[in-house]
Image (tube, rainbow, N blue to C red; front, side, top):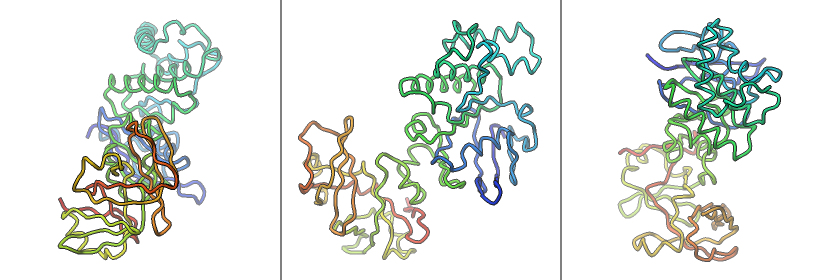
Length: 372
């Protein structure tokens, strides 16, 4: 097998389990993002892959070879970390060349590689400068160049953009993606920033409290959360998760949330017949609502009403917080169409794209799956 695989990794610090039976595979040429809240175990997983720490259980494979006990140098990795690991009193050339020199590579080959890499990253004029004199963005490019000059088998990135301001982050993100496309090796990227993850990833693994919550493409992660943690964590704003009940009326299943009632697609029939659906958790994507000013385009839609508790204008969008009759709240994400925004206290009319409803078991909080 090509690429990288981690299998049943476990890591404890004293009595705290920080990595709990984690398994996933990353193919050659795949950009794989570990996303999750801070302190969830993402960086520890990267350290286990890199060999900087040893797992208490589990294995790491690269191209089918078990490298669990190999040293970091034997793993042939390219690594970029949040603090960059730059030697401040060395010049840029020597910082980039450090790993190559440690491998006893010839001077001519080192100079050739560094020239090509420095030109790609706009670092040519900085090569003789001391690293301590560089800006944060320039230091980040030096760290990326040091990874790039190696013919690594896998590339690891641990929150490499966390210390950059927003303008520099976009440039640095493009540099990392350019490196990945050029090398076509597995890349594993750690971040807590959802926008960064969704912009860069081929697939995303969400890690929280040491556990793997879900693996999928960005669209799968956003549209089909595996459990209520995922539903409440992903998205801005995240999915509304409310208690509801399922009833069978008029030859179809309907789900009731407070005084709202939504029809379910027939594909839900089999799973609901096999489940105690009298009480469940209902996931309503904020972007799945049809606001009042678009209802004319949906003459057959079931229209609902709720009082507006808050209006939050964003760039090109608006988030409405609606209060339901049972005191719960619903957040609705709408495009800003240029019409006058609704006001707090007013009654708001809306419909829902019912095909985008998610249902969760109220006890396990795991997603129920319709039968397509």
